[in-house]
Image (cartoon, rainbow over all chains, first blue to last red):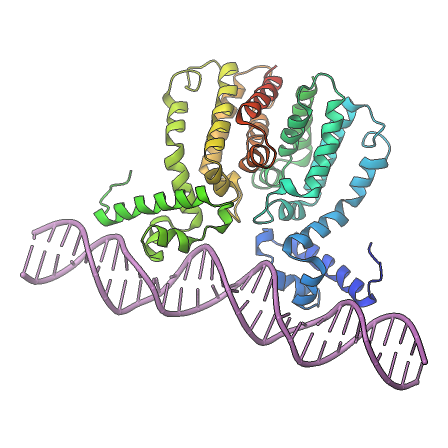
Length: 191
Length: 191
DNA sequence: TTGCGAAACGGACTGCCGGTCCGTATGTTT
DNA sequence: AAACATACGGACCGGCAGTCCGTTTCGCAA
């Protein structure tokens, strides 16, 4: 990724920072109390390096998310059923949502960091708009759904990181149960 | 409200702070860039007063929300149909959601401040748990809805402040259109 | 291998913000 | 009016995101 004339140490540091950030987010209770200083020193890197490489805190989190969500994105873009583009929409819509839910369960800290990033809303992030497009397109192919666009927003809202965290964390709801509830809810919309 | 042995100046200051905060939030692009210092000086009050009265930033925002949402809460708790408790559930559920949507449209800044408060998630706020209880109870009375609890979370997620802000603000979606979309989505769940 | 320019490094520094502290002022009560 | 309780306010603190620039390292070319 972007070995485009990048110096060797720059590349090494980039990896180190991403790894350090990932680890710190995973260990911390809330992404809020992982400071950029901590990330820098955990990566064995100066703060300047960190900010030069990623612009700002949001940029770092976004970069990390891009790396981690790459495989899922790939599976949706060009994988086999039930995620890939050849899947019949009635089957693909729930598959997409469940995959996203599972991803957020597996990467709670990161998803939380991305969405409650601080100032700017998640709705302007590429990550969101891509999922919205994908889901809305799939929904549009199901004739019983009137407003694919809004329905996509609403369904994605049902798997927002902080809600998932609330249900799976504070409440003691297991992943399986949560998946089942989401499946039932989605089925209603597709009915 | 709490004139419980409160000194006259304390009460006056409380009002002044709430008014100032409301105004500043309303005028600002994002609640993030309204600082506590600004609120204090706009209210003609020292910072200490502000923090003694409300505990912390979150407390101030919650207090403000409580005042502003009082009437709606009242209408839901003991008002006439379609919001009051005597309303048939199939009619009450969409009424609750539409009322909440309208409230968030009318109080964008405040709702946004409450939900993207900073560190702590909106899901632990009394405000949320109250709405969830109310909506879940209404949904539980509709036999075609399997998971009243989860459905309530998901439907409330569809009217989250930042999503509403995104649709009504960035995208140029009018309140009426948004209400209609939400109505159709809710109808699907109740079908 | 060496030399040199470009690129990256790192940590001291800045500005800002939420929250605290305590000497001072004001309301209240008798 | 005096004395006590209560509230006031702004200087102060710790911590954070983001910047700046003198220093180091890399990689290429001779």
